[in-house]
Image 1 (tube, rainbow, N blue to C red):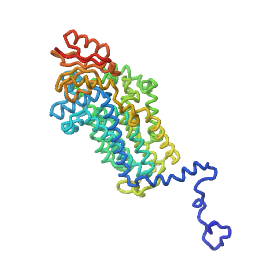
Image 2: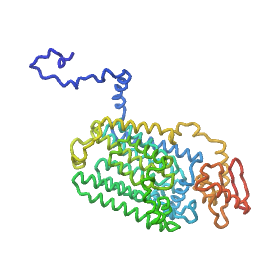
Image 3: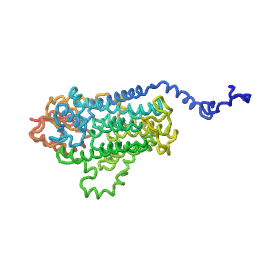
Length: 535
């Protein structure tokens, strides 16, 4: 027995060290298997890169590769659609040639800036000019989405070390909202995901200027994100009051965000829209002042009904480990959640589309902030031990009701569990599915049929076939009323499961009958694939 613990220690020797320093590593009541698992944890941690940049950018590169594989393969299999990959390709193609973003898929002469306000997608024009393919947009989206992994992983490394950083990085990259969006065509919110990740990280690290600068480009991503910019400004002002600084810069940013949203909705979008208004007011109950007042009393009911909204809210809370909801950063989700839950469009209520992607980096950042408040991680070399000019002293108001380290560990476990459970339900698992990489006979027939259409032709096509043609032809949807002499070619896949939207089956059948009555020759009619040629 060591001398410090020996009962024969003379009285004149120094007092023995506290017993807590000499407790056994594991309580005797724990099973042997549990003790063995805990014993190898330090070894597992030792294998991880201890430099946060290596781990963060390594994970980001890995997820970028995964997203690219899944999205490119889905386009190869003909699963991409005119709504929305085809629409955005036509817009970026117009930008690449110095023209306004006129999108025939939305209608004759339709300026896409009258649908949603997203001029930031024009930065993809040089890349598309060099590589004129829908895959340019798909790969760009994969890179942008994966970029969100880096700042969150680095912040988690600073807060709690490499093991928690690895968990946070994987939970971000494999989160159900981001995975769904990265594999689903292309959308303008691909720019918002990394911007929000950097902005939320800057807020959590008490860097107001960086948070403001990262959030400002959101005004050019989509019209509703101005309200998220306003929320960033309010949090900056709140943090300034806590740190005994002037809140005016944050309040100015909040006013700018609200003003930008109002200007976009009331002036910019109606100016570009062919109907002179915002096409989505009806979905938000904004069809008129009387209708808005009449439905105001139903707002609480609309926020929580129908029950499909409960699943959305539960998954969002679980992504933050539930504990993350106690972080002020979670309030950044409020603007997006408000318009989604109040909308009459059921697509906004569920978890099957790309609308939740912008919420993922916010919720993960809220989780990291909750872990920081709990003090669950050991300090690292990057963790400031004393208040500095960059990390001013927090007043006591920031510390009541602080979560415990045990609660933080449970929250991290809940986030990991949600990630693992949802992984087989979203497209990322297709990477390891052999059938996802095969080429079916029908896919071969579809490609053979589309090769009959020459470049630069005018084509009316169904939803999925249109996305395969936008890079080399001028495409409209088959259900649109023909203009002038009509398109030179008509390509339809009657087995396309997306034929219900944006083109109803009855409308497609009526237009096909009209084309046949005008003498269009039927060149292909096989297994639901139709190809007509104008005489």
